[in-house]
Length: 68
Image (cartoon, rainbow, N blue to C red; front, side, top):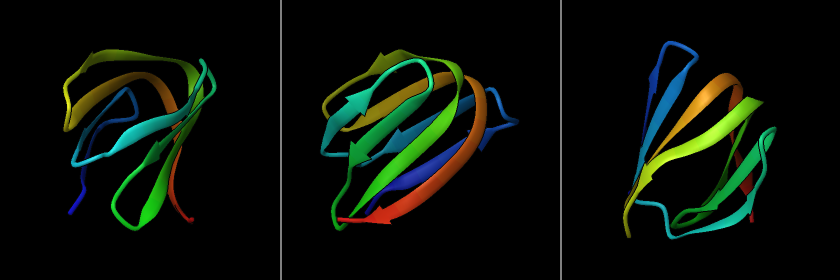
C-alpha cells in the first residue's frame, strides 16, 4: 500500500513507492505497487528518501495516479 501525505502545496511525503521512473524539476513519476504516482509542479526536489519513503518539495500543482 502506498500512502501520500500532502502538506499545503509545498511538500509531499510518499511511503511505499518501489522506484523512481522519471524525475526533473517539473515532473516526477514513481512506480508504486499497482500504479504510477505522478507529481507535477515547479522547482521540485527530493528532500529525503530511503528504500520505501520519500519527501518531495517545491511548488506542487498536481498529484495523480496513472495506470501502468
